[in-house]
Amino acid sequence: MPIVVTAQSTIQIGAAEPLQGNAPEGSYAAVFEDDGDTAYFYALDFANAEQPIQNALHIYNVADVSDKHLPSEVTIGWSTDGSKVVLLINGNPHAVFDFAAKHGYCRTAFPPPDADSGWSGHDWTDDTIELFATEA
Image 1 (tube, helix red, strand yellow):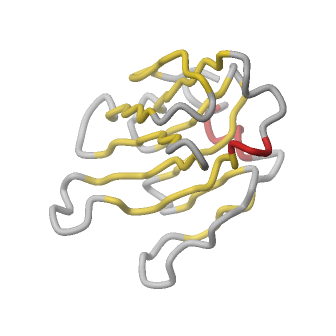
Image 2: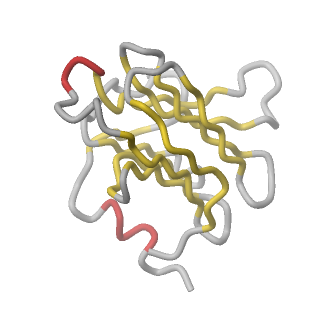
C-alpha cells in the first residue's frame, strides 16, 4: 500500500489529542481526533470556507478498546494523487476517505453520511484497502 505519510504520532488511547494530515497538494486534509471518550476521523476541504468538514467517521469508543493502556501509533497517509486518505492505527487500516468519489469507509460503518453532503458509504469491505493497491 504505497502512501504519502503526512502525519504520524504515538498516542495514548483516551488522551484528548488531534492529529492533522494535509494532502500532499491541494485543499484536502484529514484529522484524527480522540476526545477522551470517542475517536473520529474527519475529511476536510479548505476550499469550502463555510464548512470545511465534509464527512466524519467513528473510529472507536475509548471504553471499548481493550488495550488502551498501551501506546498506539497513528498514521495518516495519502494516495500519491492526494485524492484518498487512510487512517492507520498500529499499522492497521481503520478508515478511508475517497474525496474524488465522495465516499467514506470505516470499520464501524458509523455514522451514516449526512444526506445533504453528497457523500456516500461508510461500510467497510475487504476491498476498501484496494483503493491504494493500484497506486504506482
